[in-house]
Image (cartoon, rainbow, N blue to C red):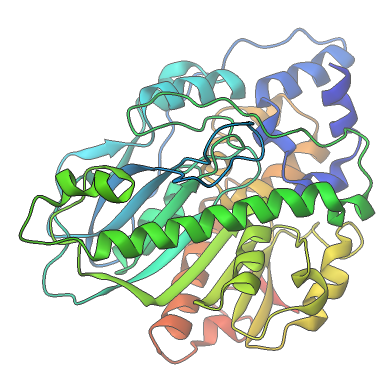
Length: 424
């Protein structure tokens, strides 16, 4: 329990370090606190996990692919190529039976780690339809790449990714295999975490040090490999069996009808939560094909932390994520030269930007942790409102900076309809 207590003793680092409760089980953290207070640890929480319905006008489809590393070495597994897995969400022709939130193996493993009863997550249905045909007549689809937090997997923020797809985007979430705790191949085979762990006693200034910079650089390489794979899929012959020919270009998985020829990499954006937010900033710095990016409550690491960006970039945070606890923001935020905003969501916590935030209070995590720990990680509310606001911010931002829509009042300052948002 020593490692977990050390993390709990340093809550100011949790948001920027990106490990927090995602890489240490909610149940184990809670039980560590309970033991310290002389309270008997609770049994696994039984509750009904739900995801809010997408708000856009289109039905949503989804598929998962594995991507062959094609000779790109894996820095965390000597002698192996750096294979990846991705989940796609996209506007679909029609809705069908909703797909699960995640493969049963992934959901069961995550539930155990969080201290939830297995059925609390294995029974969760999302809103997308597996392998539905891509919506016809909508032209080429703008692309958004999503990178989850450290230890996170491709379905961690399904409430956000499904919603963006319902507004017409092709959203591709990355399993950074070897980094993700529940990383998996499309068939549900779990892939072990092999990335070296950061020290328990890491100091704020070390969050921009070589270890974190290297981790972000690996993720940036992952993201660029995903974009390359999307380009190859876009060029597949639509008259042939795209799924059968995809393996020849390093893609294993179902290619939905109507996807080849529809992937618009000229309208390419990126977003990420926590360490994924650092990935978003790093990818924009490394590859100018990314026209706009979003950091959801994450640090920034590498050269971009000092030189900033000249393209649109949105930073969304919880109130306790400040420059006092995150040294990277002290240099990065003043160096942003393109359109940018720093938006604070009142009442939010670090995991208000992931599905776990929607489930923490129904699962009773607030009764198993201290108020300070819970507020920092999950905020003051049930996160339904925080999810609504984040969805609205994301759609408005990418519509403005990828589709050329006017910047709406939502992105220019507080409004009577959104008093929870403040702008710096």
